[in-house]
Amino acid sequence: MKFLLLLLFPLLVSAQSFEDWKLNDQHTQIQFNVGYMGVMEVTGLFTQVRGKFEYDPKSGKAQNILVQVAAKSIQTHNKKRDNHLRRADFLYAQAYPWIEFTVSEADLSSGKRKLKGELGLRGVHKEIELNAHIEGLKPDPWDPGKHSLFMRLTGKIKRSDFGLTWNKALDQGGVLVSDEVDFSIDVEANPSDQKLAFSRFYLPNGVTRPIAQAPAHELPMDPVVESSGEDEKPKIELAPKDATNPASVIIGFFIFVTLTGLSLWLKIKLQKLLLNKMQWKPLGAEIISDLIMLIFVISTFAATAPLMGYGH
Image 1 (cartoon, one colour):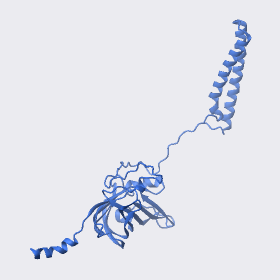
Image 2 (cartoon, one colour; image 1 turned 45 degrees about the vertical axis):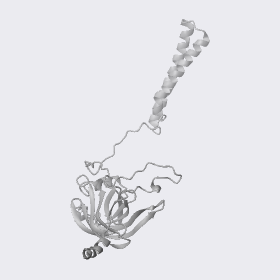
Image 3 (tube, helix red, strand yellow; image 1 turned 45 degrees about the horizontal axis):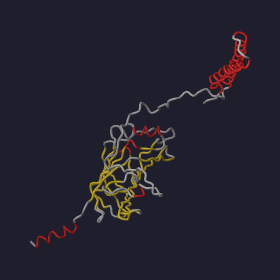
Image 4 (cartoon, rainbow, N blue to C red; image 1 turned 180 degrees about the horizontal axis):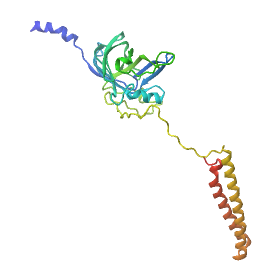
């Protein structure tokens, strides 16, 4: 019995205690850049990422690492280009909504090293190698009892290896988009049962704000709808007549003057009618006729104002 315990002792000592960890989706960033027309680079990022893994904080060992990136969340600061990148020529987000990176086991202790894993993109799975600069565990400045794992990963892939072969030849030689894509991933990870630090819940004055971290594996995904074509024309809204249009101003002013003159003529006729036919007193006839003329003039101005550029 003692002999058996002696044999098992090294195994018991070296046994690792793995915990469930997840990426902090608010602080994890994925950026990339790709050559454009042979003279510049286009920079972009993915805004929706989630991930989980099993991690032993004492040894720094990790296993069953899974990182998922929403293909539709790509952004390159150009809406038309982003829509094209989501369609079948590139990421085909409707058919392949997730870009996945998996690692069976890795050393995530502080230091610099290579990290190998499998990248799944557009249904193609290939092993890639990343450069990992792992900062290790850092205490939270607002709560020293909480720790987060920080690291930066960089790498390079060829689009053609994953079926992203769309391109256009340039007249002067070369192609529109380079095949190689450089990317970097800044990661913050926390234990799955750890709430976000106070710095992410409270403003400096102590006022709370409603911010909630999405669960590691419950990122909402809206359906990706294929557009009818690349050259989509925006809806054109008809603007009201502009006061800078001379013809519109002249026509509006002419109508206003004409109707105002007509209202003055009607005012005189009405006043005579009240005095002669209905035997009204002069003051009453004057007030009623002026009031009716004022209403008529105001209505005339309201009707012609848009033509003259007022009321926009």
